[in-house]
Length: 273
Image 1 (cartoon, helix red, strand yellow):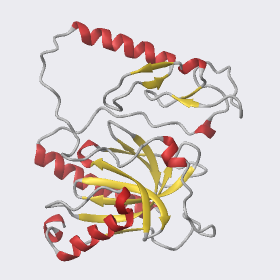
Image 2 (image 1 turned 90 degrees about the vertical axis):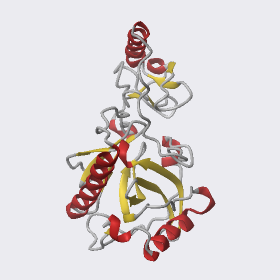
Image 3 (image 1 turned 60 degrees about the horizontal axis):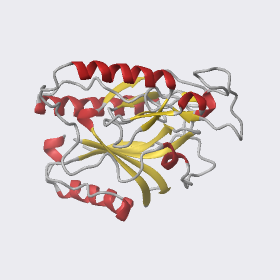
Image 4 (image 1 turned 135 degrees about the vertical axis):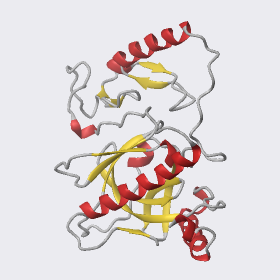
């Protein structure tokens, strides 16, 4: 499919349409050899609640963003190199069906498709692209993944001390290492994790102790080892904006109130041939 669509006018038009929808807030997506293989709306499990997101599958990257006006305007563009991606199928919950996790070294999150068929299509096409890229580069599948954030509503108390009860005055925080929902007292420490951010990030007390122990061990070994191969695509940042929970949750999505994502007969995803 990639060879068939590469360097065709229809592929160039499809990519240009995606760039136009993101506008100046997005990054250029047209590069030689890149093919847009599919697109669709998936529900992404965000910090406060599940939200619709538009996803575009290319042969080398996965792009997603917030929906302002469907098929016309998107923002909060995020770009994920596929060779850094691994997938994990998850069971249904009361809120989300047909779920799976997209895991990368910088960010991991849960999405769901409108139907089991669409989930199978997404996973099949993603895995095929990942296999092709890894074969081409000779790399092994990624084994280091960022922890997905546990949604705020999953707990009313701190998941570390199990004593502090959250309220409008007692805020929830997330450990960037384990993804647990924790109170301020249990997450006062910051630790530099270059894989996730150039700045020190909030971590819970348990993870802080573990990270310090790991750092001490690393200091004792020979540092003259070869640098690991970077997974970032040349010229690309992980996203065109802050990929934090705030950017995911504070946007006002234009979404039809009467649309039932899981029960509608509408197909929310399509793949090109």
